[in-house]
Image (cartoon, rainbow, N blue to C red):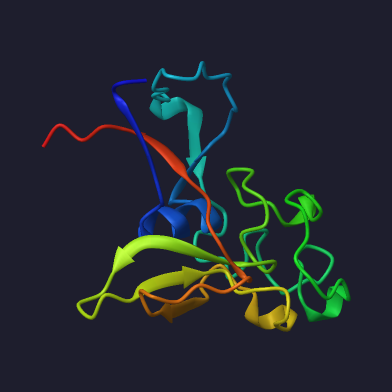
Length: 153
């Protein structure tokens, strides 16, 4: 895996994972780890809702995300809300925990995405963004990693 890196997603990567791009795969081909899959244009289709507010689409739905109305009252295991998966099949991008991105602003603050379980259903959106000071950590902050080819720049 010398040609790959593991890191936090950037804000655009996180948002695309949550909302999908303008085009989505029409097939889900098996991919061997360590090999980059490039889909031919014929394997893509227009995203029916590229500006979706929530990973599953619209509207808010407490059956699809860990939020106040779900009445869990704490963090939950990934996969508890499979109906809330993004167009790429990513789960728990809305609600549950705020997720860190790799982007940092000029003052050193990082960005958190997706909101947490203590928020109401309307607020656990894929578009939810919150700033976080660099020396702060809280039990409702989490992260997911991306595995990407190393940049050759």
